[in-house]
Length: 255
Image (cartoon, rainbow, N blue to C red; front, side, top):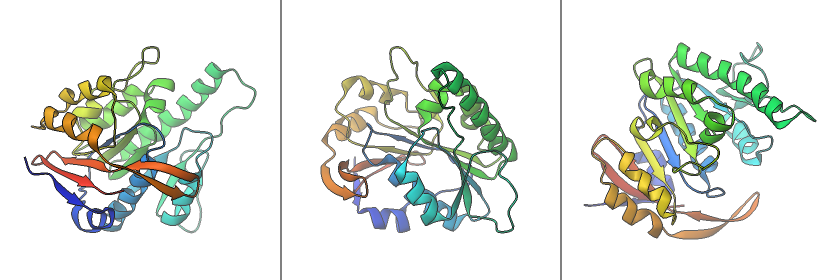
């Protein structure tokens, strides 16, 4: 099986072909550069499909990378949905509801779950959209929104409601559950960073669409890592395995 290699710039500008309604999945342990890559890809998708309504669901209380990319891509950060009216329409939105201070964890989670549920339903039902779920485990399992996310994965393509779902751990957790298996079956575009955990690699057999799980399992633990200076300090950023299920076709993308 031939696996092409592209540097990041060539892949973004010449190889990545996003069509409205396609879903995207991304799996890599924390601090591997998922958010950075996701917004790079979103910038290209928006440039080629300016009619799509882009909204990012940000469940974390802090994310410096999100703020950087919101400025870079002209995304307005809002803490309520639908966004308040303004005379100038931005390229998209980051929905970042406020966490409840001094509230019990369960109360804060229920509050945020309600906020994100409304936003996800609006993006799905309105169609012609790209929804970034960063990260999807938090939305699906911590905030209890697997059903809302399944709506995208099972029925969103026809209405051009694409869901992009970065996730740290494909095998799920013992106590917190796991993201719906549709997160593997439904995406057209899949990205994997270096991962040496055998439990995670077992999930590759869940990928539908003719993808060779043995090839995927052989490549992922051998993706090269590079120490790269970022605004948040030095991080170990790996190459990414990219799979387009239309072929399927495979490529290794530089950091």
